[in-house]
Image (tube, rainbow, N blue to C red; front, side):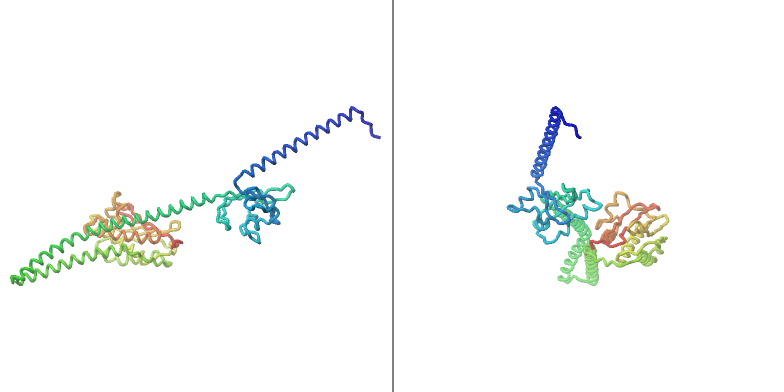
Length: 404
């Protein structure tokens, strides 16, 4: 039989219940206030926030920013893909696989262009636990369309600037070519003018019947000189055309050592005549690569010829060494000679059109070599060789560039 509570005991229990009730009420008021503050923060954010069920795709929550896009509609309970993307089926870019399962609880951040309006959004998706205990998809979408447009404008500006720089570079090269042409043509052209003046004087002599056999021979000689000067101008123009004409690179799978050996074989007579010893150390481990073998042979022929001319009056031992090897994703060809080398201050200039240090050089050979290697997406460089002369290094990618 339970003991009867006294009046004082009952009164004390009532006070405890009232205090507990007041505490619960205060907690409810605090929770209600925190909920209002939380929803107020969500409502004030100029970003879209919604919650969807991963099984049914029903919208469980959408903040005012999203709801304002659908005035007069109650979108809660509707399919997210239907409301947000006007699709009858779930979106193929839905992030469920990236935020549930082993990724549950981890945020997934991604940029997304809405196909409905073209607007760009930075999205943060995450699996969260809903009050009823189920895991749902929460997404915050921040409009970054202006930022994306600014980035695209900047990218387009960079592309335009790059195009302008390329044009400027071409104009600079054209200026150098024009200056080289003017220098090359001025001398024979002046000679032609002088010869024509002499010929005109002789024609006057013919009109005055003051012509003899010697005069006829002199006229013939003048004509020959004029033709020779004219041919020289024609050769200059042809060299410029050869340099400026774009080459069609016909890449085939090639053993890089083959065009090297072909160039050495074609140069053998000249090398022997000039007393130049040549050694080749071509690696058998070099992989097949996609190059135009005829163009590679042309480069090697030009570099060998350049070395021969550099050592034409060289008083010391004359030697050329050619090696090939694989370095990373490229094949490397090195041609070293024992000649005078290329001074450091000239190494940036020798690949320019019409630049030459030789009395009778055209200054176009190394320019063409540089362009051929560049057309292969490679690099051509010059440095000092271990023999004290020049060393030209050709670096060509093994696989063709995707840009081609």
